[in-house]
Length: 336
Image (cartoon, rainbow, N blue to C red; front, top):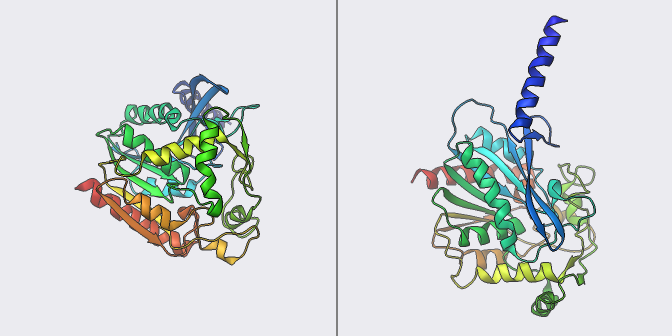
């Protein structure tokens, strides 16, 4: 009984210390923690961002860290990825941007944005914590719209301790087929009628390729990452379009090494089939390769056979060699 009381007292003391530092237990459980940042008030009301970290398994004073930025209709849930970075000696952090996942408050409109400059405060808050906790070399990593966000941020806010940019299927161009010609018009409308609803597709095939309950390997909160891509508004379209255009024709000029990763092929349709488990069901890899090559002078492009849109969620035979390549690439670039 005495031993049990001592263990309880130790746990209670650790929990109090955690809260005092601003960290709380995260929904991912075990070694994950989160803290929220009040980012003020904007056109939609109060906004918050959230930083998640994986507590390292070692007491070593690590100097390298990763900040991961999720995509649209998404949040950070890739615990397997975090633990892999941990095992390779990186402190791992991920940000849930305003109006996404952990940062979304009841009654607020999810995913809303008018300019990608709004995300600057969310990323700055995360980076400030990383630096305060001793990280001296930072890898910025983004998936899909998060890849666009990370690229846009770094093109405007280069910082000497951000040493590399890793992009997992970045959203650098639309993939709308014949409807793509409507983007400039919707973007223009978004400048004076940003709340105009813009319908999305009805397919949940991509979600089915990910979720364990269907044809995938993973579990996540489908209230935060919806089965079907939700409708957006004209303001969101305008924000994305302006961010993409700002990175083209040499305007990005990102000086750090960039690892640009994309699937070997794309697929589509409203109903799941086996193609959805080894192709990008969201973007066109040719667009990623084309526009990614212009992000800066030091781009390494990697075509991933059998890769899903979120490459780290691809089947084991794809993601294992991909991770080996990522960590080898980082070791080379950070040790140069």
